[in-house]
Image 1 (cartoon, one colour):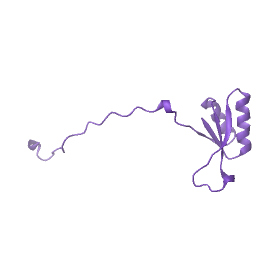
Image 2: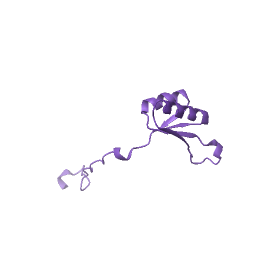
Image 3: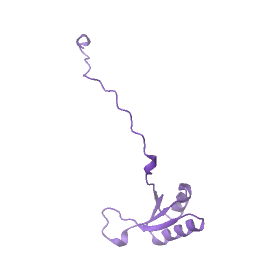
Image 4: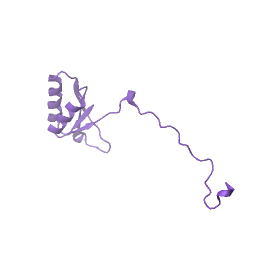
Amino acid sequence: MRAIFFDEDDARAVVARLQADGFEARTERERLSGEDDDEDHPWAVVSDAPAFMLEVLVDTHDGWLDEEPDAGEQEAPLPPLDLPMAPKRIKRPDLG
């Protein structure tokens, strides 16, 4: 899970709280597309903490969660559709 914050102090406070609770956590600079100024990039907190704990910290420090899709939890592909072989004849059902 990743939590995104625009303030470096908020990100560092969340990391300190998570590490104090026994979870692994680190900060990274999050580069958003279209941002040219390095000072405007938000801070990402990457952690193995449970999602509900990060949600509370995100609400407290004005950030948001960025849930990464897990490689092991990919959705199963949908079965193929059962499509007709030819168009249906509505006006002359006796022809088809």
